[in-house]
Length: 343
Image 1 (tube, rainbow, N blue to C red):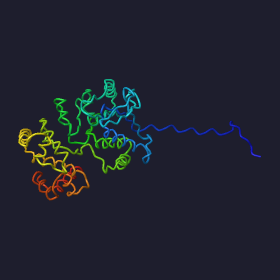
Image 2: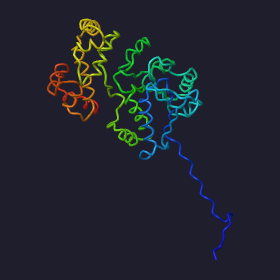
Image 3: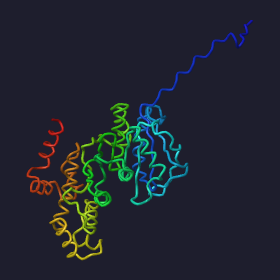
Image 4: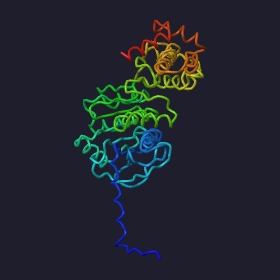
């Protein structure tokens, strides 16, 4: 006969271990008309680093979208994201990340801006992604700090913040509790930088590899874009340079660029010479070379592939033009850059 045991005689269940605190806690503030890709790239790095495999449990990292009101926030592409928590105490986060978006789209509410100022007073590091750097500056939170913006918004920044010169040739910048990023894929690299700091290099690399990003980029790595000597406030020239940068692989001629901009070839040439001291063709060569240098600074791509991606006819054409402007070959330039990094 089997003896019956009372509940009192059963051994008490072992207490559950307390859940470990996450090593990295991030709060997101999304500006009105924020850039969805910048937010998604950042948060996906955290998600993939937070757990084993891609199970997405917020164990090692925890992230929350916060706002003044729990109402959906519309991104620049029209997709909405719902905040999970109201603003509360900024000290519950290791970083507060502001995801910017379209210029002049409203940014944050006054209460959300006040939250950022409280976070700064509590020494919580602030992160500005995409035009999030503009929002931090407008809140008076970037004075004396270096600031990174996309090359695409370099002149917009100069126009809005007189006397402040942003960094627009780097992927991201960290300066005494302020981290700013050019946006796009750069936000994934900035997130990986934080993951490596708080969780470890393996977790950071795992996240990027799952996202099919080969190598993490450091703050000093260049962002693809226009060479700094081609910056100008002339709106026609700025538009022409953007057309060039966006059409490297199918290079339009000067006549076509002028037609796209609705001006005559003569007017385009006159404006470019006045603003840059260059004709359109030479400016286009500078833009191609800037992109070639960006690709050469990263390992793996052959000179032939770089020539195609940067809009040159072939590798011989790239080598010839590169030598004329840089005084050396692409491969020699790449070796010299690698030596500087290793030194």
